[in-house]
Image (cartoon, rainbow, N blue to C red; front, side, top):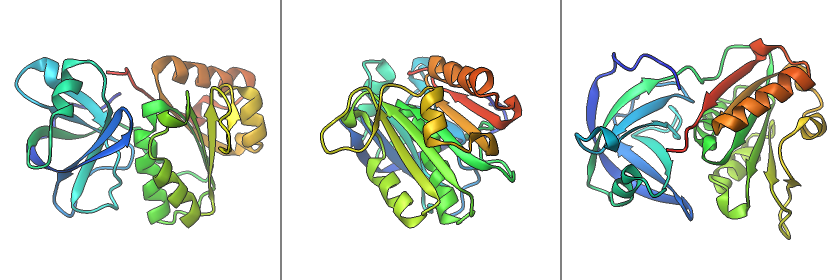
Length: 240
């Protein structure tokens, strides 16, 4: 993740709601002013104490169009930060600093494609929600890869968004097919992109997920599909 991390003022915000998104992912909604100055796709710093080990940079999963709160979403792992975060409840407070990053929607004539994996979906959720709420009029394809159905985050949100905005098409990719669930199987590769995004040369691609996945997706787009590197926007997640 990039961005100047020295200019933003630190704020203490109260948790107003904790939402379980999957068996190991939670969203934390922080009470915030009606007007929040950030762009869809950016991230924030979250500190749970003075210990540097209790500080992380996490994507903002809410959209600027969602008023009265600022939301971040985290996979709960075995780390000390995750354990401390998992214990938080409404009424508790956390220190935050925002916004950071340039992984944001760009003013461009191109159609949009998102390639995302696992918890890397968090900034994509923010950008898709913003695009739908603002009715930006652009055709959007989201290819979202996970190991299994139980790992999918924001499944209901994306179903609602695609229903409200017919120009948004969601393609799930799972390691193995699951009965009754429409998806592709395997992994995101050049063949899948050609099949699901036949007009890929007309799109700006946003890649977000684990670093190895992002590097692999960039290589596929540039080397196998011949996409101009200027049409690829990336964000990496370290897995905290």
